[in-house]
Length: 102
Image (cartoon, rainbow, N blue to C red; front, top):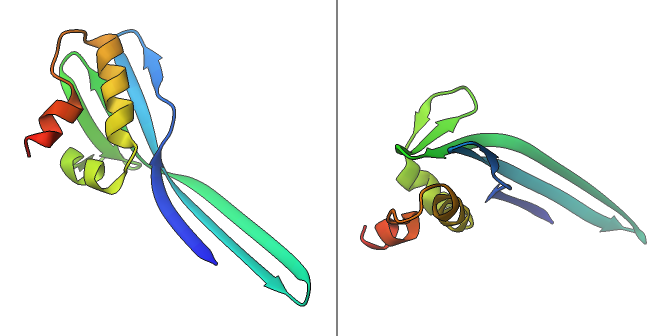
């Protein structure tokens, strides 16, 4: 079995800034003649920076990414961003409210 997916990791907060790393996970497992093996890999794909100014998404080389596309591809990113926004920007509309109005 071969699986791959994108996921948001725990945010890193420094003052009014928060960074949410986005990682790609791959795993492969097989069972042959009563023996089995498993291999897993995790690598950085992007980072979302949030602050009082809003949010920006960057790939690992520092190039800008579409935040909307990243939110569509990473299921738990929207939840993590909403949690961070509530803690650093109280009173501002959260990402989940904005994304529902696509």
